[in-house]
Image 1 (cartoon, rainbow, N blue to C red):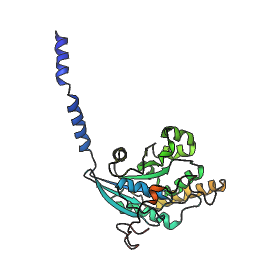
Image 2: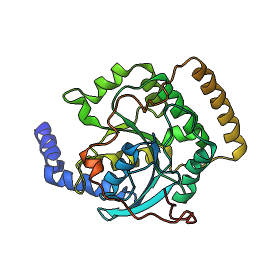
Image 3: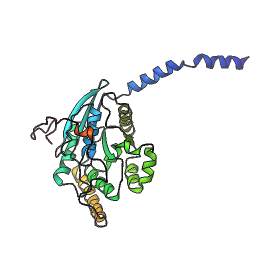
Image 4: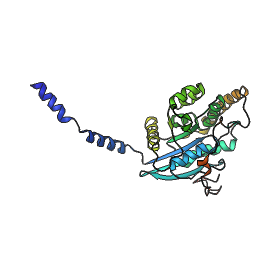
Length: 283
């Protein structure tokens, strides 16, 4: 008799599935960040800027020519402010100029009090040791802590066709594995040709919020002396690797598409003046 009463008691305390769903949604909303500040990092071609446009839901970052300065744009998505800073893209066949590196680091000050995440845009396709070295030499400018706040975003995913991103990652070998291991295997796949109600954007934002929760807050730059030491070490490492790597001068991250009908159809955008250092400057 007692066991029956115990079972009945448990049944009384079981929540209706709809109520459980409502409570889960309420808990998620309570932990939801009111604002997300994102910095785009990647190569010098439209994949990075196009991803920024996808997040904003409109054509804000110019694709016609590569940016030489950081550009900041803002929007509101589902009652939440989203700030996106696009940075100068780096080259595949040569080291990044010092003024470009300084401009990339300046992106952090444009996301005061600090960015929630860095989105490292890597197009799906061939990934080599040179590509890995280029990522290392550019991200080291921010200090080692940047990896704790970095999310790899794979673009041009249509190249995969029926192949999963996990299979692609395994087949690319140790160089891509190294990058993913550095950022705790945080990655996301996005389709750059869907604007507006994008089915993958909510998942991307959830992953950013998870980074913030796991790392205990936003990214902040450490003192310049610490950064300078880590930069020198990484640059020496990359220079030694480059001596053993044959680089084609006109190679741009493998044989990937640089433009297509979607990119060509994007209209030219008005840009800010080079003197505007608060909201971003002209490309």
